Amino acid sequence: MSQFDKRQEGFEKKFALDEEQKFKAVARRNRLLGLWAAEKLGISGDAATAYAKEVVAADFEEAGDDDVLRKVTADFAAKNVAVTEQAIRAKMSELLAVAAAEVKAGK
Image (spheres, rainbow, N blue to C red):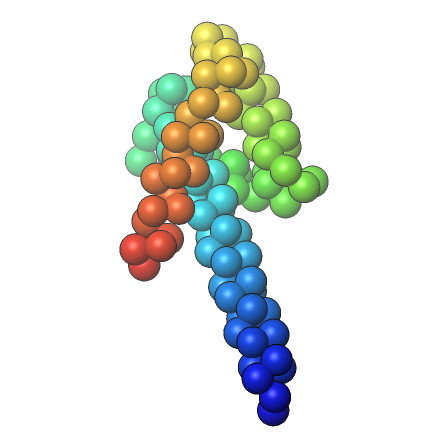
């Protein structure tokens, strides 16, 4: 194997690892967002955990964060919880940083 092939293989492995960590961080962020939203909705215990799983599952509807945002926004609207879309997006950003740090730390 040439030096070029070794470098290319190294870059491919790094890319795969980065993508895996990104996926895990987004999934963790969505779980944390679900727990945060559950608290705002007055849901606790096992029901809050189940709701967080619903939020994680919502992310598989389409690429990007809009599907998760739509779910949480709709659930807040259904329960008359006054949280703006901007506040939800800000919380998503905040929780992504937390989740990425946790994934990187191996938690």
